[in-house]
Amino acid sequence: MVVTENSLVKGVYENLSDNLRCLRRLNNLSQERLSQMLNVSRKQYCKCENGTAIPSLITICHIAEFYQIRLDALIVENFSRDTLELFREKAKEYARDESDCF
Image (cartoon, rainbow, N blue to C red; front, side, top):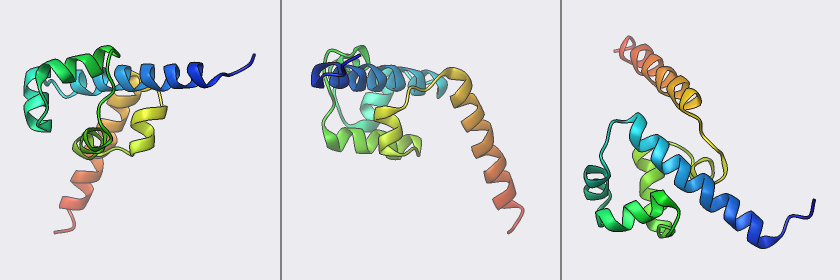
């Protein structure tokens, strides 16, 4: 199989839009609320989540920072709900362990 630039870019767009939707839902956020928190219009965020637009690099950086994930993971990896639930539980465990230190 030959990987063309177009298919690579399409894969990145699909991963990004799928990950945006999965992360938002996992955190029980509406598109409206998240777009306000990111300081973008709901319409623009919706387009990014649906894969019809790509957020700016600055917005992608804000999203990665908001969810506390690596920028490359947000763009390249394809998160599943199970993976994100596991990640969330590990983060809670880490927070509990850190609070025991004080």
